[in-house]
Length: 317
Image (tube, rainbow, N blue to C red; front, side, top):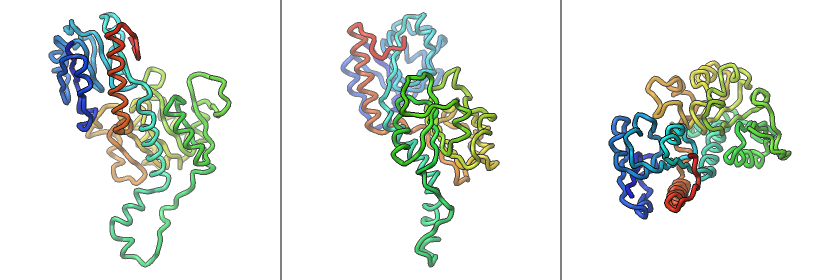
């Protein structure tokens, strides 16, 4: 069995991929540019990847390919319909990064809401040491207790973020795809959620139903001092509209770990916010705590074992 890991660099240099050798010969590539995908899949039985895009054009000659393992929950980078027609199995990993993403989401919200960047900069600059006051309370920050926290997408990550928000004393409202009859959480249509929330965090997958879910029109519904955080997918909001809203003082703060095109382009709309204390940007790292990556690799190995024994564990196709 021949296995190719196409973008091992996305899993971190500290994570050993040696568990994959249980299944056969493993070829590891730190990254694979689009023009090399087809050649690196030649003769390969199992492909392991994170962000590499696979479609009919680069899969057509992968005659030996039997299984694609995506080291992520989202699978919008793989042409699932083509794989189904070609008889190639596809599996993903679900739930491995819940703790990690929830932790970073909370970190971003707390940093913005408490203005930690500004206070840190004040001390680092030497201004605190040069002053005579024991403390500084500018910019003014407020408690989250008593505020309304809107959770857009009430899956595993959304539920964990909601639980922490409740522990902080927030009223939590959410959107979700289906009414499960769970009365422990207040469910609102997204427009109403945006109108009432002081904090909004996004936890939805990217698909036809969520693309540009937060449009320019919807962003205009939000409170002018609201905090908006996206650790889901860059395509679920209008990035230019988000940047414009913050610059115009129509949002209180913005944080993003994800971008419609990654890495962030040099002319990305968020570049206009690079000097703003009300914006925080991270390089798609929210999912990647060490423990989460270990769980991810273990889950992939379990899915490969299942596949080799005729099972369908974590299969999309």
